[in-house]
Image (cartoon, rainbow over all chains, first blue to last red; front, top):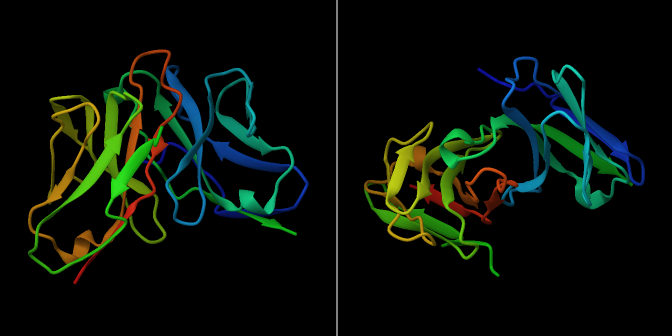
Length: 113
Length: 115
């Protein structure tokens, strides 16, 4: 059973913010929201993760709703190099046995010039 | 600091041949895992290890063996390759202790074709 739901694709203009949505209505209290991306068949790259507070790092911001049933990954100024498949994953944090990442099909973001 | 290194990058096997996909990390990560990715699909977990001497099965373990004799290395063995094992294989590692799990580091992948 899929734990997250993402639209299959979206696009945005270069230089604009890209807002990538994710639904995770069955998320458990001990599960974090992780975002990874995969650029053209390279290995996936970790972006950000959070529990219930909004998070920001040098790559992106993560906004999690108060009920934790959905989240949005924000790339504030998208560039052509951000064109990739973005995966939203929910998983417990901690020891490896409990924090296996289950990847769905993700959302394909296309950044247009 | 090389991160996660996978070898070879490309491999063609005949049905029934055996081979080992190598994965090494230099970050002293306790947790290592192998994924496969088929066209148009997400990554599926094959095997994982939470430390040297400890391995366990993931979602699609059949046809694959693993061992973890050192912290650094986590090889994936195909004993008798089948065309259904044609895929891109990714190795990943991370810290496993609470408070230090800031995401997995992935290798660049091994593209395997079984004919």
